[in-house]
Every structure is written in C-alpha cells, then in structure tokens.
Image 1 (cartoon, helix red, strand yellow):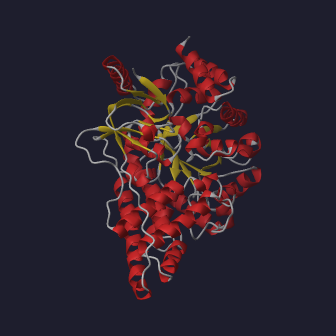
Image 2: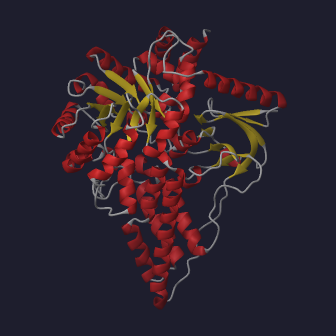
Image 3: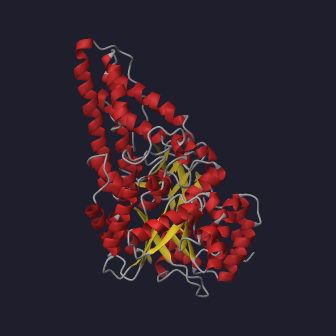
Length: 561
C-alpha cells in the first residue's frame, strides 16, 4: 500500500526513482599523542589540508557559479579562519595529531555557533562539512558525499552540504529529499537554481530504505512511497501538463485580465544573467552585490573591499544585459552568516540582531560611497532603469540616511528600502516619505517576525511564507506603497510559489522577483486568473490562522470550489 509522506516542497517538478542515501562515515580521529619533535610537521600538514579544502571549495564555487558560488566561498572562508587555525596549531603543540586537533578545534567553534542564537546555529551544518573534508584529507579516507551510481536515483539525506548540492548531476539525481532544512535554506535555494525537484524538512527521511521507489512532488511537498503504476502514470501526466503550460506561457507577467505584474530574477552576479534572459525575465529584482566582496575576501586581501573599478566592471555586465529593463541592486548585505573581516564585528553575541546590512555600511560610509559611485559609473550612458536599495532598514531614520548617501554619491537612480524587519512593515508609510520604493525580503522578514532561523528544520513551519502573519506584514507594506503612489515588490523566495504569487498580487504587490527557474511556473499560473480572483484568494488566505489553512483557502478560491 502506498504511503504518503509530507515535507516542504521547495523546487518544482516531479521525480520518480529509487532511494539512494548520502554516504556517511565516522570521521572522528583517534585521540593519539604526537611526540613534541613531530609538532612542526603535523602543523604543516594541518595547514596544507586546510588550504587544499578551501581551494577545493573555491573551485567548486567557480564551477557552479551563481548563488552556489557565494555559498561555497563562505564555506572556504570558514576553513581559512585564522583563529581556528591558531587553535589547531596550539592543540598540535601540546601533543594532538593534526587530524585530532582539527576535529577538536572545530568542535569548540561548533559549540560557540550552536549557542550564539539560531541565525548562526544554522551555519553548523556548513561548518561540519568543512571539518569533515579537512579531517578526511588528513586521514587519507574518502569524503562522504553523493553516492556513485550508473542509474538515476532520488537522493535522501539528513541535509545536503552546499558543496554537494552545487555540483549535483541532474541527469543522475532526479530529485532530493532531506530531513533538515527549510524553504529558504541553502539546499532549497540551490535546488531551485539547478531545477531539481526537492522536498526538505521531511521527518524520517534518513530512515527510508535504500532502493525503495518513491515519487517526489517538489510543488506540493508530497513524497509517495512505493507508488502504484497508476499513481506514477498520473504524476507523470501532471508533470507533462505543467511542462506544456510552461512552454505555452511567454511574454510579460500579467493576470488573465491584463493586470501587469513584472516578473524579475534574483541573481548573485553576472554568471546568473544568461539563465534569467533565457526564461524571459523582465529585469533583475534582486542583485546580491555581496558576491563580489566575498570573492575578494577569499581570493585576495581580506582586509579590503574590491576596488571601485572592479565593482564597475561587474555591475555594468549585469546592467548591459537588460537594455530598457529594470535592475534593482541591493547594496552590500554583510554580517550575521555573511561576515566580512574588514566590515563586521567579530565579537557580537548575536550577530543576526546586531550590526549587519545597512547598519554596517553606515558605520563604514567609505564602503557605501564607493559602491554607490561604482553603480553610478556602471549605469552611465546605458538605457537601463537602475534602482538601488538598502538591506535591513528598520525605520525612517535608516531610510533617510540611505537616501542621503545616494544623493551624496550623485546616483541618478531610484533608491529604496528592503522590508526585512517587522518594524519596517509596520511603519512603511513613514519609510516611504524618504525612499521611492519598497522591496519585501520575505526570507528575513519571516525569520525576524517568527524568531525562526531559516536553516533550522525544526522551525520550518514558521518559515512557511503562507503564514497569515507574514501575509499581514506584506499587506501593510503594499497598502502603504499604494497610498504613496509608489511600488512595492517581493524579492524573497515567497515569489517563487506560483499560487502564492497570485496571492501576493492580490495583496497589492507590484512586481515579483525569484530564481530564474521559477519564472515560467509563476508566469503560467498568474495568467490563469483575474486580478479580482487574486484579491479574493488573498483575503481568504489572510482570514485563516495557519499556513496550511491559508494555502488551502487560496487554492479553493482559485479553483472555483
């Protein structure tokens, strides 16, 4: 009899195949002692292993490109952390082997992260992966990872390290299911970028028997265990219908009665532009500029920002790809899980609630001014509609400070504020007196509204973008923008859910930005409904008390039931 399990669908599509588990191994080195005279050699081995792992992560990032590159570069920085290396060398000096010293030093750092608040605790899985890679190299054993197989399969794991997810072969890995993670975790974001169906936060994923046939629906979050031939055929039929609808859907984003909703792409840099152009993105709704800063930190002098000329080159490459289009650039968003040595404090007790985003830039105005000048130079002479926005705006004071900085830099572009903190949504009318548009970062807005880290599977239900409280905050922002005659877009992962995109439109959101792979799904779904239907679906969703009820209520309205 077929069993139906449910997780969180994070990447559209249907995958049917046999279960294969991510390889695991115990990588705890024995607690052996090393003679004092061997310490220099062991310290050298440790340094070489760390540098080799960092280089490998960097190379994987360069190969993967896009958002995966930024994630892997952050892992490379973890490996090269000077304080960690100093601790490793200290442990070796008092008798540990290189492998054991690395294991123990990372364990100590892991404990610090785990107790530093949920935002940083979410980095523990990434840290464990770095540790395992270094220890495996020192011990001369294979690194646990994606299984070897000549036949396509569905990958099951507790969680997937970015280094594994980024280079999955979609011709072999039909889809994946994880026990941990959430809708905005690294695994989810990278799955969407790869176009691989995926379900995360599914209880019992690691207990699934090897070789069992499963059907994974990345749209609904359902995983059917041992589906019948009839069920498999029905799922394939549904998948084929979805694909046909996508192929038939072209042109600008709009409802069936012609209400325009521009569909834009989220990118990490120039490498992501071709995919956005291919699916007909009407511009860029979120250009995460921090990729350039992390690349500089991992490859060069970590105490400096990239030069203004280097920034101009990268920004112009993106702007040139969308003549007459709209490109929304987010200035450097550093801090919390994206620390930059030259910019962010190293000793904050809770970085997620500390100096990050715009707060860091206002403390280092020279970095902000350099970036704004570079953007002004990059846009000079181009027929592009440049808009620049600040992350982590809390109130009107923040918004005014950013607007003043844009004017000081001579930036002839629209400047706006991201709504990622509940206070910004509650006081959106006030903030709009200083800036020209709002952009809702629903990933962080949910995280701060519900005190739920997006990397922690145990609180995934609170990161569900269908949560009525989150819809209320979005509605407040959209209503404020309508009253001010200004725009209010969504650039968080909520925009990638086709049905939720209809609800967001009904709430008054004026544009939707998402990973390029999701644009065809959203375009096709939006074109099926009128603006009035979208508004009724939005009202029905907000009238409920849970995410599941909101999703069901919206679907009921849109299906005409």
